Image (cartoon, rainbow, N blue to C red):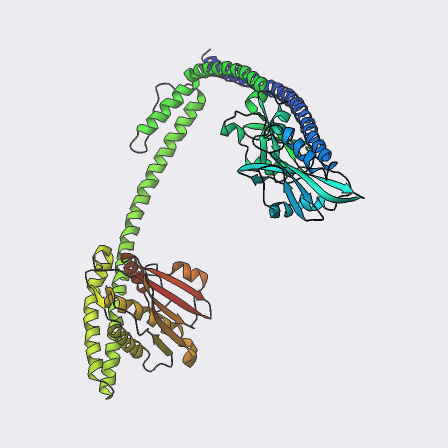
Length: 587
C-alpha cells in the first residue's frame, strides 16, 4: 500500500495535466473554426462591396459621359452657325454661360485669321491655349470629335476646356471652345451621386489630381486620399480593388473622358462591419476558454507549481549559493530538481572561491604591469626633448653651434621639466588650458624648424615646413602644440627611414575662419587597416622602442580643446595626419 500511494499521487498530477491539454486542444479547434468562418465572412463582405463599387462607378461614368455629351452638342450647334455672329452671341447670352450647369467662358478660334474671339468676361491668354497639346490636336482633326484640356486657372477658378473643331471641306477652319468649372460645376458632382452614404467617389484627371468628389460637405480628412494610393492605382491598366489600413478602394482607369479615371473609396469599418461582429463573437468564446484554462492552472498549481514557486523564492532570497530544503516537494520531479540544485550549488560555491582567488592574483599582476608601462611612457616623452639637446651639444662641440641653438636647447630642457606636469594636465582635461596664451606664428615656426632640423641631422630625409605669411596669432598652449607637431613629425621621419634619400616629410600649417589646421604628410611605409583601428590606444605601438603613449596624449589634449585628428594611410605609400584646433578667445 505504501508503494501505491506515490503512484496515485503521480497519476493525479498527470490527470490535471491531461485535462489542461484537452482544454488547449478545444481552444485550438475553436480558433480554427473561427478562422474558417472569418474567411467566409470576409469574402462575402468583399463581394458585396465590389458590387456596390461596380454599380456606383458604372453609373457615374455614364452620367459624366451623358452630361459632357450635352455640352459637346452645344458646341457643335454653335459651330454650325459660324459667320452669323449676332445669332451666336444671342444664343450664348441666353443659355450657354452658367458657372454651375454649363460653360464659364466660350471662345471661337479662327484658323485662317489666327485670332480668338471671346463671348464671355472670363478669358485666358491665347498663348496658354496654344501651348495645350489637345488644342494642337484639334487643328489636325478631320472629324468633329470632342477634345478636353488639362485643368487651367481661369479668373481665379480651376477649369477645363472642351474643344470642338469646325470642319469645312474635311479640314478645320476654326475651333469652338468652352471652359467648365472643376470646383463649382454641377456637371461633375451630380454625375457622382450614385455613391451611397458610406462611399466617396473621386474623379481624377490624367495626372491623377482630384477634380471633384461625390459630396459637397466632407471634411478634409475624409476627402483627402493619399498620393501613394493614387500612384499605385494609376499603374493599373484595368479595374482593380486596392486595400489600405483604413479604406478599401476601387480604381477604374477609363472614365471615357479624355484620359480621366475614377476612384471609389469605402471605409473598412463599414465594409467589414459583419466581419467585426463575427470576430467579436468568437473572441467571447475564446475568453471563456481562457478563463477555464486559468481555473485548471490554479488546480495544477496546488500539486505541482507551488513547490516550484517555493523553490524559486528560496533561491532568490539566498545571499550566496547553498543547500535548500522544502516542506513539501509535491512530486518526484521536484525532489529530483531540488537534489540536483543542491549538488550544483555546492560545486559552484567551491568554484567561485577558486576563481575569486585567481582574479585577485591577476588583478595585482595587471596593476604592476600597467605601472611599468606608464613609467616607460613617461620616460619616452621626457626623452623626446632631450634628443635635440644632445644633437645641439654635438654640433657645439664640432664648432657648428650658435647662441640661438643653445637658447632653443635650454628651452627644450625646460619643456622636458614640464612634461611631468603636462601628463598630470592630460589626466585632468579641465586644467589643460592653464598654460595657454596667444602664439606668434613666427616664434612657433622657428621652434618647429629647429626641432625638425635637429631631428633630421645626419639623416638623408627631405623635410619641409610650409607656413602662410599672413597667419594670425592664435590662442593655445605653445609647449603642448610644439610637442604634438614634433611628435607627429618624428613618427613620420621614422616611417620614411627605410626609403633613404627618397624619404620625404612635409608639414603644412593652414587656417580658416573656424579653425587652425596642421597637416603632416610622409611617403613612408604607411599603416594597414588593422593598425588604423588601434591608433591612439594607450600603450599600443608598432615601434620596437615606442610605448604607444604619443598619439594617446595628443588625442587627450585635442579632446580638452574640442579639437580633432584625422588619419589617412595607405600601406607602402604613406600617411597623412590632419590636426584641427578651433579658433577661440581666452575664457
